[in-house]
Length: 208
Length: 208
DNA sequence: ATAAACCTAACGAGTGTTCAGTATATACGA
DNA sequence: TCGTATATACTGAACACTCGTTAGGTTTAT
Image (cartoon, rainbow over all chains, first blue to last red; front, side, top):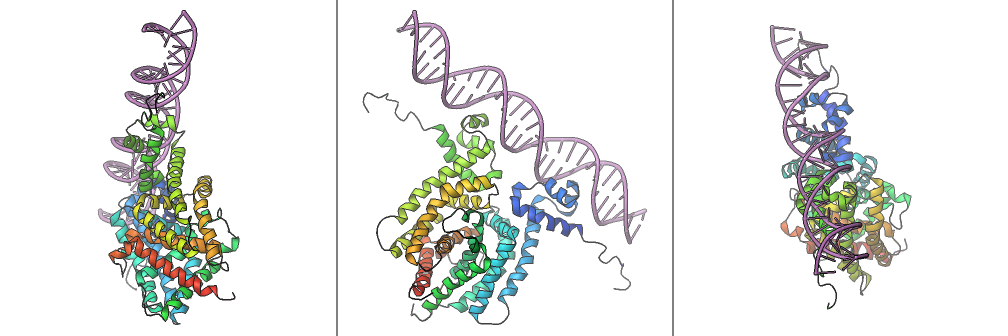
């Protein structure tokens, strides 16, 4: 760190700025709904400049999504780590996931876009590099919660109970029985945890 | 069938044919991913002909989605109707919904596209004309199942447990603990029903 | 001098949409 | 029964625009 060129952090890397500014665009409008001109305008560059940093639109999209997911992944894993009984960790995770989905709508939408993606290669990359780590942690937790039940199905159900609720956010307002406090992530988290705790606790003592 | 003009069923109405053939296209590639040329080619017409039947692409999309949903709506309501205890009807519905999601991938994808739609007017129309009826039936069932719990949240959880599982269909294969039989709608239905039955039954006797 | 980082300008292909015209079938008066 | 008017259901060709991408030139820092 002495004789080396001192340029260290001369200014934020343009590449990262492109990724961070294009991610919300892709989240809101999807791959087809965002043009290279849109991205360039958002960053304050010309379209041609984007091709200096990325080979093509596909690569830009993939990198932007991956980057966005890796940020959230750290936060999610932090919720699951730490000490406490399995049930305490579950409640912490469900509450944290719900808060994240309620707060960061862009991230939620990005998840939805990825689930709709028909590009098998891209979906495989994102599944393995991004979803998998999150899922493994919840999967292991599910094993601890109820060793008799299919941990894969149970882990997916935990994600589904939280994520689907916020997926339907805009649509839910038109449904009967809707009250504003249901949009509160803490309320949803309590509902989900009660459902799971009783559903699993009842099975604990059984032969099955 | 005697004196009437014998042309009866001269041929299927073009308009309906456009709707039925464009729906799978929109399901697979989304609004932005399907061009009027794509639709025209699928039906065997020129693009201009589409504008004889629909004012613009937006209208064509809206009608195609609405049409597709109304077909499924009848099937879903049939599952909930009929006699039996609330629990029997729930099991019938969950099994039927799971089978539908596993069978008709296009319909599942259409649901996902609608949930991602940012056009508020369009989402409002589809929510009220299509989702609402399905939801009301499940909402009422939720009231019967457990009057002490928030029926709105519970109904949404029932949908979420089933739909999210199939939403992640392609991605789930990369996750740990995956086994082929989990793709069987009957297996998923049993998992969901057990979770719900125990979760709710345990709450039944409580003060709460 | 050299390389990184960016711009201007354009290419060809694809987009939603429109307009003038054309078969085909039915309805009507002679 | 015939010809003609009329509405229906389309076609062919184009318009103005946007798309992803690229070639070649320019600035800037080392």
